[in-house]
Length: 388
Image (cartoon, rainbow, N blue to C red; front, side):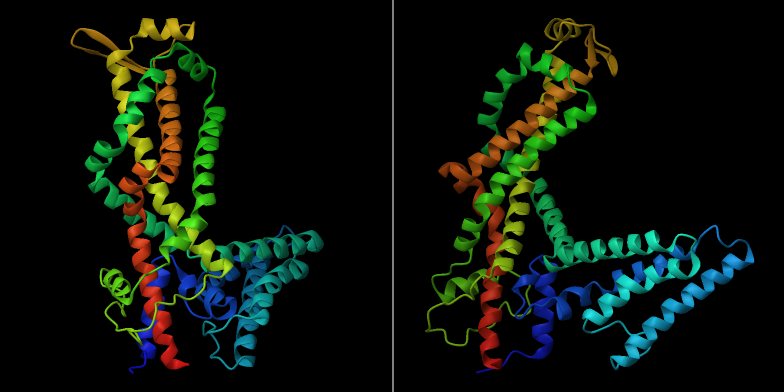
């Protein structure tokens, strides 16, 4: 039985973070994993808040002196805490606990107390801002939202390469249905009544609804993705990745596969990953549908028709001649195309979750990579048994 080397374990845990799944790390904690990884960012914010020392109370060279004194206070506080915790003077912490968090929240807020004419409100304001920054930093770091966006970008690049397949498999029925909506006078009348801000709110509401459907279904999908029948299946999935332990043998190949239980935070992390993977396809559908109706509308809908449908004169954004006919680009045209695109995305999202044909065509595409990451998670936790 070969133990997992510490460097291999560390590399595997970094791999999980890069894939947007930090919760796969064993004994994942806020002090040792979350705020430690966020320490460079928090340090930058900490020293930027030295500008809170500026006030009209001082001017000229005196203000420069105040700035220098504020920097000195922050640096001294960092040195004292590091030395008390047994670290080098300017070493980034290897564990961020209440002392370090208190330093971040309180010390910059003390500067206005010393150098400002309005110390009370500015102190409370900075403390509140720093607490909000800590909360946001925790969520972003704990659930790997930044690497998760990288995962989504990678998915987007893959989907662009597979755009022809997406169009051939998923769009014909959507186009057949939405063409009748596009050539409907009532739709153009509704679009002409929207100002850009309210129009954006409506589209945002439809997109949030689509994300909501996917989020509600995601926990059930996560439970299915994490199940593996045999170790051969686990190894086959893991072998398709570049994880440091992708080719590692299980501790007991004859034993049943027993994936570690998903805690609540683990399910949230995985659900976010599943939703992002699905959202990429949904957005691709929206873009393709929208571009189709922009092009189709330019050729099929004339100025007189738009004015008849909207019951009012139109002001084209631009116009040009094509084959002897005037082609106009109007706000109403773009608004209708955008609305139908987002509505189609919502319809596609619901169909992908509920329709067996759509699930077979699209679901495995968006979740295959996540299942591979979960296979590596199984091997990783299995290897940790040798260290127990």
